[in-house]
Amino acid sequence: MPIAYNSVDIRGVAAEPIIEEILFENDTIAKSLVTFEEDIKAETIFTEALATATLQAYTAGIPTAAGSLVAWDAVVTPAKGQFYQEFDPNSLRFSRFKRDMKPGAWEIMSTEFEKLLIGGLYAKVISLACEDRFWNNVSVGTKAAVAALVAGAPNGSVGAEEKTLVAALTTTASMAFDGIIAKMIYNASNAGQVAGLGARIKVTGVAIAAANVKAEYDKIYAAIPAVVLNGAEQPIIYAPKSHKQIIVAANNVPSNFAKPFDTDASLQNIYFNGIKVEFVPIPEKVVICALKSHLIWCTDLKSDFNKMEIEKIALNREDMFIKNNLTITSHVVNQRFNVLYVG
Amino acid sequence: MKLKIKEGSSIQPYGGNTMAFTSESDLTQDVLEHLKESYPDDIEDLEAEQLPIIPIVPVEPELENKEVKTEDVKKLNK
Image (cartoon, rainbow over the protein chains, first blue to last red):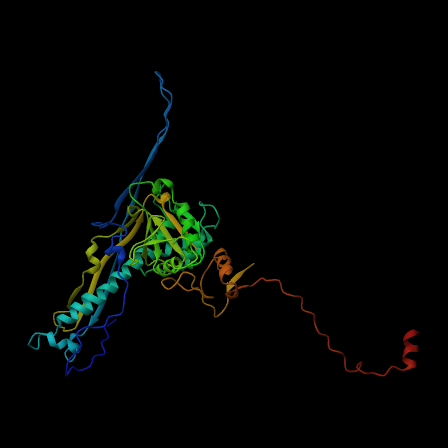
């Protein structure tokens, strides 16, 4: 799709700032909210292990084997994708962008256009799109597999809420990878390496508003394994962006004897029972609580998400393309310690 | 019970970055049952129990307002 620029022929002065639409920051990358595994071209192995140790009475004779030590590999290959657009820089010749074009008919590129619109706004939108896919993408195969599961209440069954959520997640054409949410619900990262229901801790939720946000977060907190809460690395509550307003509204209820969430004055740091709440682009009625080291963004190079190539389409042509190549997938480890709340 | 999203309805239970469900969405019955809890007005049951339809039998015109004579009654009584 070409870039559309409805310009005005510039005769006077242009106001310096170009007004961009307001966008969220890609906090997943900017604040490193998950673990990044780079330098993954294809088929990188993640190994997990678990063990039980059984103390038994000493014997001078032949001892009986007890306990277990299980290890397994998960093979991860990121999906490769790209963003691509074409444009004719000659259309910039009459606009505000002509001001910083070098003299000469051959010189048709504007530094302001490259820096602000392509390197600024467009790169930011690409970064946000990747963040959204990292959390929310689902492959066609996973969607069908989850739809075929029989819903039930126990943790060992998929929840009707989880089935509905996966049905609502969007696929990306020809990019068969699962984002964090789909990966938590369905994957093959288990000892048998057989695709099936994820070992997440399931919490059944509802629609969250200021009136019930404390009660619903209490359910999430109660589901976190004690070993996680008492560990050296503290878990993170990953909440939808809209929960920030809900949390602030809940804190503002005058009749509450204590504010349910701890915040600083700027509301940039929000905690629930000592656990940091971070806001990411996940669907409404979905909250994840996990250690950062359990949620992994797998890619070849993290800076690919911000790298843009601008070149002439062909040597004998003057129109140009903008291209961004990247690889992306998600991986979840230690699944049985991660809480997934779905309403 | 066979649930279906009503024609013209659009349900987006998980917000803007997810799909909206319509009557064209290919959803399993357990998903539709879950959606019915939150969106009862947008889900219909195609096998819902229907009230029995009582047929209306038109009155034959020749019997309507016909004057009954004594002779007719006597004939019927024979």
